[in-house]
Length: 285
Image (cartoon, rainbow, N blue to C red; front, side, top):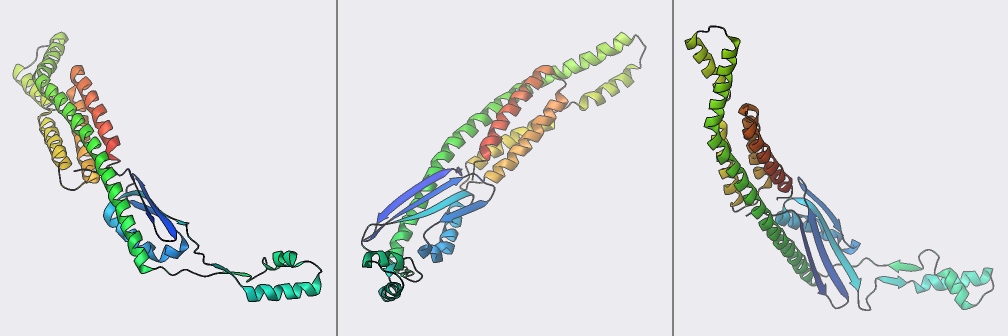
């Protein structure tokens, strides 16, 4: 079962004093390219989150975002009353002004406001971790659904190439006869007496250079192997990519050896189908 590298998953949890939203997005990439965004208080969990994402998503350009919205009265920022009162006392000795104006000045001075670093509540984090798992499950389902669409497209295009190959196989005997006829006609037009036995030997040697029997067999095997790989338990886009390269090699060789316009037209159609397969393979996990 193949999976796409394109996916999206989002989950939200409402805690007593905050709302946590988890978003995971992914696009295709040769390796795992992971970018994380989260409040500083959760940074100590980043390494474990990265390991979890790597084990679940394996490959792709992945953006992980943890958003926090305070919904209760909780705050980690406190006014340092002692420092502010001291500032105001000193300010009164320097300038005249009412208490409100002095407070506005004092609150902007160093250490007037302090922000305490929140410690992660482990019970709270267990709930957040469940939401992260939920988001990853959603993006995996998204990838599987996208993979099914890709698989249907691959099966259809492989079937098209196989059908074109059948036409090539059916056409091959006539192609060889056509090549033989052209060569024989060319010799006869020279109007020179030739050794028939020697000519026949040379003709056989020349026609063997255009023989595509091995290429037809190998291409047929690669098409079967590609379809089996599509049905494997794991999604392996790189393996499918290697098989498609081998398919392309055989198709190109058939084209270069064909020396027959109708067959070359079929080869062009096979190349077109294969290019579309290769484009889609870039998005397979």
